[in-house]
Image 1 (cartoon, rainbow, N blue to C red):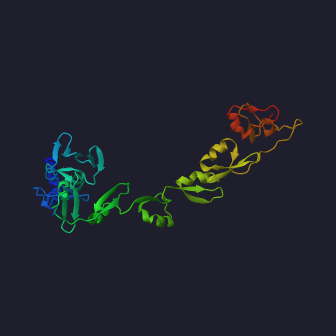
Image 2: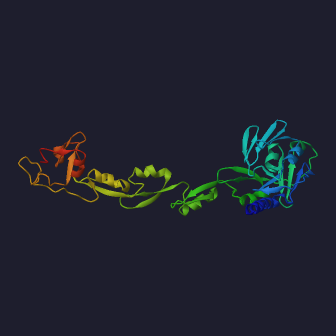
Image 3: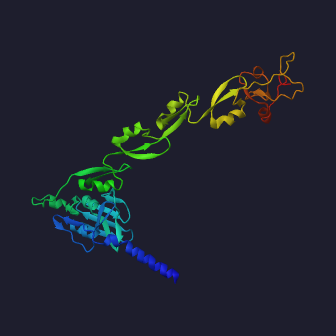
Length: 346
């Protein structure tokens, strides 16, 4: 019983949700000077006036077909064929797609279509009188005669969406389109150093530049002396070329006195091949007659040694290792299978 009550409430809620749509909206529609009468009132969805499908197509002398399986509408007039589908925002005109602001819908078993889009697709002129809430449609047949009924024609304005789309709307509808995210001029995405983004009209871009916004993504660059700089993405490689990094850097030291800057994420890798994060000088053992390093026990030395990629021995002296020698720790050399040089590491 409880489930039955819930189901009934859901049905009632669904029915009531359509009440604002099918109620009398006060919108008037005239085609070639004659009012379009319908048993069901028009309504507005996303700034577009929606009308019953068959009423508008038949008044524009178009043949209309409905495919219940695919929920597709096909309307033909002279050499023009348009296709629409329920809940799809695409109108196909002679095989070419156009974007819709409002999609065809079914309400109380009646199909509604956006009047401006379908009328213009069939060659008609559409204007809107905001004062009287009236849509005026002039078919191409009527426009070609000398006795066309004069209507209150108003100029169209091109509106811009943030995703690059454009649409031409009557001057009286501009504010309505602004209310749903359209602009009077092209829109640019601006980027802040902290990752925020903002849609800005083209004429305001320079003003946003002056208060720290950019027209492309921003990356913080780091100098070895600790300075930082916000750089646009397209300039990163140029800054790298003059010694800047995309992350903090650390000064590394080799046992032979060399230094290098390493990105913070690579410090451990540098340590693994014998570099240090502060100056380091390996301890020296007493010299033998052969000039080699040795310790009293032959095994107490734990400092830096030198190895070569093709060799199998580690050396206490770089000169003994040869020109391809690189510094590493004794423990790392032993772990890699190197054995002591019989000359300098006895």
